[in-house]
Length: 267
Image 1: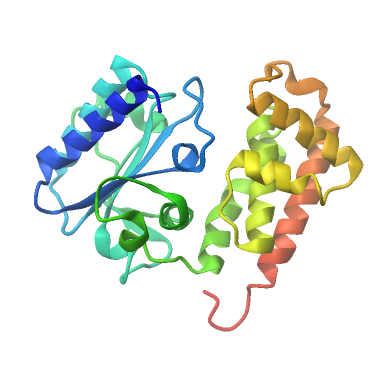
Image 2 (image 1 turned 90 degrees about the vertical axis):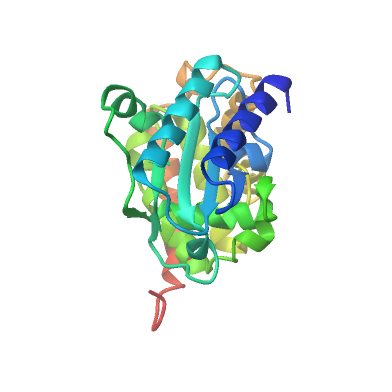
């Protein structure tokens, strides 16, 4: 981890500790930072913060403003994606979809900058189940209770439901962002088959052994681009038809595995 990124993470932890010195369970990194695929040029800094009891709206707002200041200083990749959740929802009181207290990300940055009253929170987010699964299995504890203790194991049915919404968008988005969607489909299929928490690189390398030769070439090109060995701006020489065929086949395989989870008591 380079010094600039460490500075940004330390700054984020200080924000949370200043607001909640007694009720903060911990701050955790998940996503590419925890899974070993972080790229300072393109990756988000994915954070989860757990509180023992709710904070107030003003405190959530100050956290978002502090994260924006850290982004402006640089060194934190593409910016933060952060959710504050009650600690009980990450452990004994888990529900799906999971309520969150506050969320900040690039998608909300302009609203936070231009609306001084804005706070994104008070909803339920199905994505959190997958984030919790990563945090439990491979999360980085930046402060507080160790991640394997703070996050309970998440039932794989909930994890599959959490990731399916994302991968179902692949057919529409894969031509515009082939590296993300191809490798995300690969790691999702690996989870559906083996319940393994994998990075995009790990998912792609795993999938090379099981896909048809035509699809193997697509994965190889995306892995090379992900590693920085090939530029991704040109579309990697892959046609929209090739990519759509890949997305359809992978999604069909994932959906087939997910369907096996359905049954009495599965929801």
